[in-house]
Amino acid sequence: MADQEIPEQKVELLFRNGTLTVVGIMLAFSLNFITQWANNPLPWTLIDLPTLVLISVGILVQANALTRLLRHDSVIKRQFDRATSIFVVGVFTTAAGAISAIVIDFLQLVY
Image 1 (cartoon, rainbow, N blue to C red):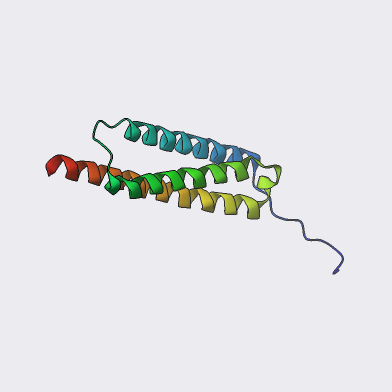
Image 2: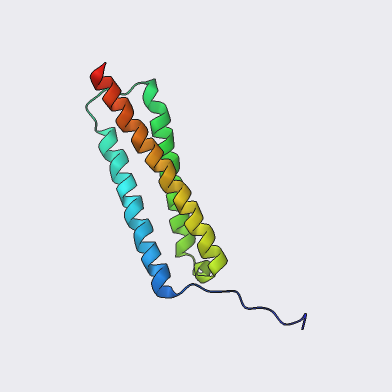
């Protein structure tokens, strides 16, 4: 019995492909947001640095998740779950940066 290997659970390909689509769309949205933010007519200052760091790190984390999901072993549930967890961290980090950019821009317009 000890010699028998328990097969690892796998993710259905249709579900994996749907997840890949979502990750790709969210990464494209994040890249578009940073492009639009970079073209903002307000001058950049040091106060914008945390926003830049948050959005950039979030994008890199999302790209890492996409890379993991594109690998052949991403059909293994453990690998898939890890990649999706990484993606969620990237989305929240990018969202924190986007919210930061909006708040900073608003405060610069008001004051």
